[in-house]
Image (tube, rainbow, N blue to C red; front, side, top):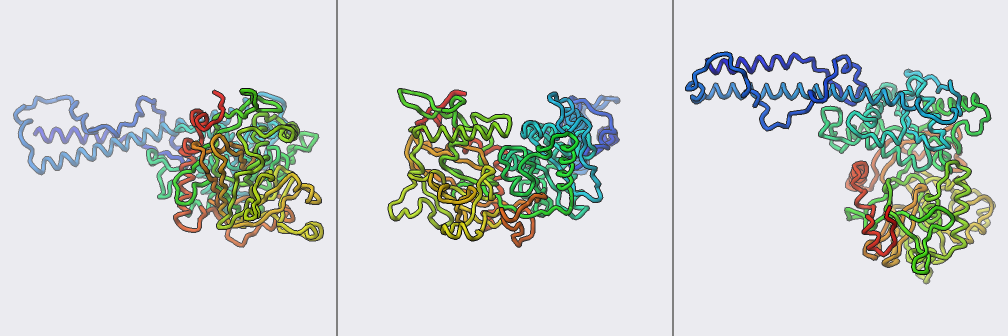
Length: 632
């Protein structure tokens, strides 16, 4: 009788809990169904499946009958124990299912709140009148015709043009759910935050694109560094989290929530919106050198220019091609890089150096994010990287002011003496590409890098919006014949090196002599303690050094193939033919399966921010290496 009573109470409780209307909600839908269920308070939705004994509540069953204590203490028979254990397991499973459903309801509520703030936030922005007009709209989106698109836009770029474009998107159906402030997305990674909303829309765009037989697209709006920023956000959204596997973040066996096949077929193709100063990436892909409508005097004309630009992105007629993505990796056989990073500090103005003990020294500061991984456009070390480091402390709000600042910093470098923390020219720098030595040239004859200003590679055929490269050739060939330009999808490094006299010897527009080389590139510096080098990638500068003062190497190789969208202004005469003969897809790159896996793991560590401590030096490490470092 006692045993039957216990089983009856268990079944009764299980039945009452199972009657809860459990509505699943995960990050693959917008949770419309979940919102039909009354919201649950945070206190009632606490997840409890980690408790040591989910069956312990049976101890609190209220007695409705008087039970003989001796009968309770007798030993259970085998069949009775087995039945009781099965009931316990069923009860625990039902309880966990209920709590899972409650978590889904809570997530749906959080997502709904975030979406409400997301839609209202841009309309609440204050400032000058929108350059596209107060009633401007983006072109109508036909879900049966147009390619699904998302956007990650830096609102501060393009003299606040990014903010105006986001405001226009908020007033236009379809785009209002798909155009995101990239800074806000990265800042709001909480459960149910804006990163989760972006993930939902990315999953929806994937399914919509698959139904149309196309690849989804994403607009990266900002300066040249925004392309790497956009890739960071995409991979962050796709990074698996097994603690939230029931919410759509289950690992598909590769560290991501999409399978390898889904990544290859559905990774969004990037269209770069030019909102920066140089806009080399957008210029290369044919999306222009200035933001849409920049040259229009009337708001109505600017609105039409913006609509035409967006219409080209969503048009299925716009071509999608392969693009080589290079990355900073540890040397082969190593698990971590052997250098540390900091940034140039000092005061704003002509000269960032500080006078210490009667001499002018560079003062460093701890490096900000991001740490270097993706290199989409170019990489170099030397005077150009030093100039960018100085510019970063003097960045202006408009493209014109930034161009003037670049010129001012170049002039400052030319008239100032070399600071003690740097070597003259590229002394103590060596570069190899694959198995071939590249720099300094003719090193066997005693040549050094002392007389050179810069060495690096181009992945796109524009630098700073002014210079591009072409294969090395004699003077007569440079004048009388066409030469092969730097290409973005030939898996080759278009290497360059130059002195102060290089631009005098090259006739016509600024053009580098380039050498197509097999990767990877390995740059080694052996300048000793208290010395380092400035390098830049995609217009972002850092100072690299060895904490011990020993030699260190910067190793860069192709790590991915990504799809990109070509714009209406694409010019194959400058950047070469866009078709490299391979099927357009996304893939991690490497000569072996192991190398491809290393690239995948490096990306996962990057989005999990595990590379920050590996690469960025602490203030104590900067000081211990023999450099001055400001406190903040």
